[in-house]
Image (cartoon, rainbow, N blue to C red):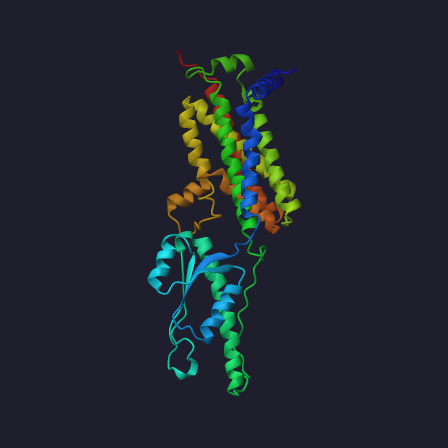
Length: 381
């Protein structure tokens, strides 16, 4: 057996032996990832928000307003849970978080042609929770528009008005790749790999920090050889375990829930494993460089915990500051997410090559720095 193979095998057996003895550390690789996948899957399995509570302030209380209320109440997206008399009461309910949106039907809305101007039907929604508030607003708007169109046609027929022969151009919008507008596809594709990315960094700090004796790694180096092969053997069980959980998540999303991967599934899984390997190398480097697990945990929480927010998947970065765009580009998760979403949408493999190259750098460069630092003289305690 070559020295490299000896170092890898020795470090790997040492780590597996520790996991067999320490149930809490083993739970970080078995129980916690499974619970994270289960919780997120259960939270998003409905796909599209339904029966979001809203309030209706009907100041008109006429035939048209009652038809609008019935139409909105029949919409599966929202549910009328409150009928306050005034906007002041409705706004109080919104501030308390009891409703996500308010529909106000003003007096005179049903007068039609008898009035020179018709007051506007108003929708107020909670933009502090932009996604769910926007969903409530969209559900209300669709239902109100349907009722107004139907009532307008009925009024035209009743007055014997002729049909309009010249029709204006029609604008048609078509949703690509997620026609159901499902949060399950969109959010699970973002959240699950981000959670596993953060967990990988934490377990790598835990594993490497455990070998510190004071601020020295001399004991671990003596037992394993302390070279690159030993470091790979040290991190291998964690990368392998998290990669398996990433595969389980993908099987759930694509194989069981039926969301289509139009590109290469194998390429996506390989890139995911490369992300986890690079994450473990970065977090191990933090421990080896500073020799303080507390600092390494904090730094890992900073770069991996902020990855989802700065990936461009949740918040737009096109109009962001230079710092925000630079920080996004510096994070490994950003490059993995681009590759993953490209493959979900069916991009050719050639498009993924630049992202694979960048992900490889996040593995090779930290491992090289780890090797240089491991070769330096140990501090005297």
